[in-house]
Image (tube, rainbow, N blue to C red; front, side):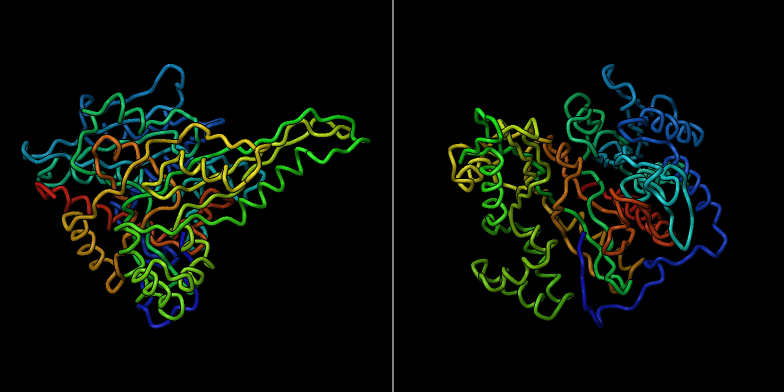
Length: 473
């Protein structure tokens, strides 16, 4: 998600975080995890032609083979979406007074066409120190780790103090699809009840030189919301142009939207992020971070950060045109022109307020601005308490010494919003390090470094084991 250029003297290169090959023989437990990871990746779960229900059943079979009782495996789906099912698994803790924790991951993936990829997107390919496959990072890595973690915890000499629950769900990648996390939050709240949850949404960041910069923990995210700009008029014959051409009026409105910037906003997560990153990044960018945290009205500092699209996305609500349609014939004046505006809305800003502001910005009664259905509830960032942060910092120091843990607010969206909305604070952790291109997630030839997969897997297991021993955060 974040790009860091020109960094020097930050930390030593960590072999565990760079895309090194897997020359050494795998440990038996690593080989077992790889088999889970491979099976999950090679089960197509794209919305158009895949099945999350099948993937959930396969993961359930692995848990059952590891000794989980049928009563501890809860499959769910709805008749209208039989291929979009999921699974909740429960490992009972030894202390009934300790509130459970929840491990959440989505097992659906973005569409992938074989003809566009260098390799088959639904075959795990290990090549050049990387694992390639659709979902290699987003989000089947973490889903496989959670299954593996439950198996390891169950085989340990002592059960954890807390009950550990796992939910593998569908529908995260497609707005309007059946969303398993939302379904569980609204229909099976007791089944997933937990003091907190761990989810996707943050990762280890490598700079362009392959050096680790920071290990993120997500505490909050912007809301993804679509708005439609539309112009209609009677149209007519193209030989008789008129000034109120629907396409021209829409183009003018889009130009105004492209030039507009929403006001800067800060919350506890973004303030902590920029404070910590300022010392890591250094230089002009680091100085601008410090200046802006000190004085949010510092326009000069804001201009420096806004040059970087990633930092800009953390500073305020952003809106961008993503789709266009208009006209009905090559020899007719357009009767309708429409554009989709995708906004990433800063937490706490009402979605309707964004629509109203866009209407003001287009400044034309001919251009209507409507809000599409919301992807999910509007939620505030969860509190980043010492109880959750301290174990992450301690285990990060074990696996990635010298790399700071940095809170981050995700500019993209996750299913964590559905859990937060029903009172389960949800934090994004991954443990694996990725390059500035984010391993091509959502794009062609998605990948994750082999070494990062195995180290991230161990990091997450230790983190879950540590948190599962804490009776309360």
